[in-house]
Length: 364
Image (cartoon, rainbow, N blue to C red; front, side, top):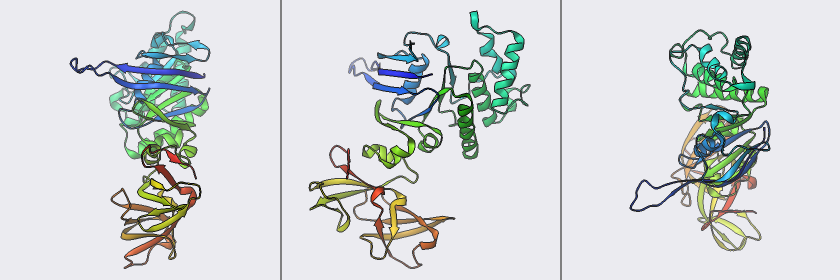
């Protein structure tokens, strides 16, 4: 089911009646979610991603703009009439019901032509339970399940009606690191098997990048960039996007372009013909550093962190806006013991220039 959001805006009235300043939670959100794809809404807390999800679900009414499921305008439809499945961060399971009863509950509330017989409901409940691999837990209650199992029950309940659109609001936040990894892989598997159009809200860029077909990066209610996860990582439109994506995060420096050469403090690190002389912000991905005795970038070595296959070289540089510069290099070429300075050359496709005033990307 294709989902089209046209100029979607949500404005909340001010709680301070004296000042009267309104809060624009989502500002002119314009996007088409392709049929059968998993889209990640990504951004820091307060960027409007959950508000966007709630407008798609019908739990919140947009201040302006329209929402279409396929060719159907659902902007004024109630949530129960939109054909959505919604999974919350806190699972929202009924504690007095068994797993089977929780999954059956939305089916028992279907009316009219969608109403199912008891046998059909049971069959559907066991089908979705098997899909999320909890069919052996049907007689248990939520208190008898782990966090990961409870989350699977919530997903099964959302899938029971075979919704046109599945909406996931930070569904992995309450899980530990290992369960989070396992469950996000399960969500991706389930989405691929069911081919249900899915919107996944998260502030965790690693989650969004690992399972999404496309990501939408948001800031203060405004879309910053839309694209395939790797494309957005490799080609950020502005400094905010570059800083938000990546683990470890991108290293940011103050730089100057002089006569077609980029300088970080006194280090001439890159030729950039065609770029006028100006102050810039410079982002270098951690994997963009190449240890090179003849390299142009000179950093003071702080420490070396061995991570098995790779090594994280921690250093400082006078032009760095971060307290520390992190460089991920091959373990076979780590700096020698006792070294005080490390020198690098930089991979051109891993270094980005941004206008110092607008923070927009300068394409080389």
